[in-house]
Length: 411
Image (cartoon, rainbow, N blue to C red; front, side, top):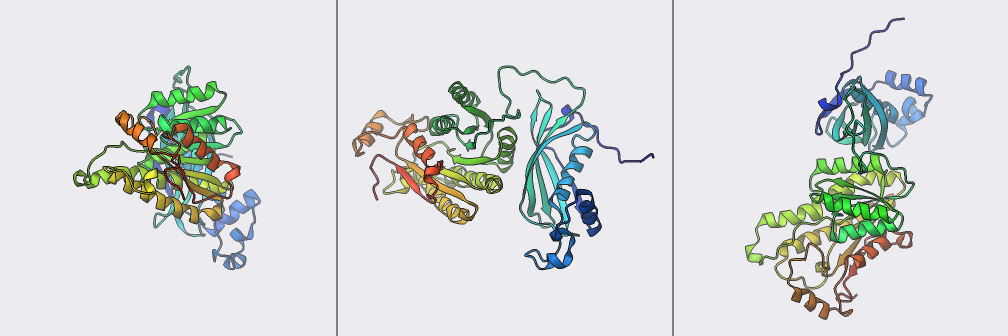
């Protein structure tokens, strides 16, 4: 029996660029749902029994989640790349139900490519008519064209799956200073760590090498955490390489420049707010579905001692952003407790890192002299505090701001 099918696209690996998007609109009818129930054997009354579904919180039958997911199969198999596609994996989170006869828009966006393995990393979303996200996730697709693969030696590719069986931690700002030390410490404590960096690729890879030499598992992934699309790509890489994060540490921070309040402009404040509020919000929202689906997790936001007591002068833009992060962290802790996601904070005192290396030596000596423990904080002090807050021993702590200040702040 001959059948005629629509011809799929025949995109080759080199025809596809990061940033490209493909979409399709679809409305699933009751006949579609009945046909899928027959094919899959899933006759859950929520999908096929109108009387039962009317008495639920949805008020009407809803479309099977896997039937919705078939839209991604359609886009991959017919559009990107089409004929040469081999689906390798899909991670999905169902955020809102889709009712029968409700129009939806499925979108896939290319957020990563691996020349060595000829694979694509895709962001996948289904959105409603009013643009609300209904389903979100990521996919990995191999392009089976005849183009020769690029040989990459001596480096682990971020898109190559790592089967570790270890819980996954994502640390931003992890190429140097406090973030790098947090990554090392969590790896030592048994986590598979994704190190996010912005510009310092070689430094991030050096941290990865140190972790691997110590027997740990890590990989470096570039992203500007202030940019929503970059964050989506970051999470897609982490999901495909290590799996869903159970720990998120927001340690990325902008450059510290001391300026008197009278010389500050609003863009100075916006720069710090982008790191301390926008980036943290975007990252937390991105990992929330995976954490919730996994049964919970832990978020630690790196604040500063400036949120307690009298702040140093010349830092009004930085101080305001850290206070905003304090409020955001508390709001998340309260709102996400039902999902068993704990949100805590660590507030270091003055710490010698790349961020503060331009300070004069007398600043460090004066700060040590006024600290009861007679020294300033080290990145290891901060990392140990983070490690405690994400561990099972701190399972009843959320909304806590742990001050690593050597006794300068006491409650």
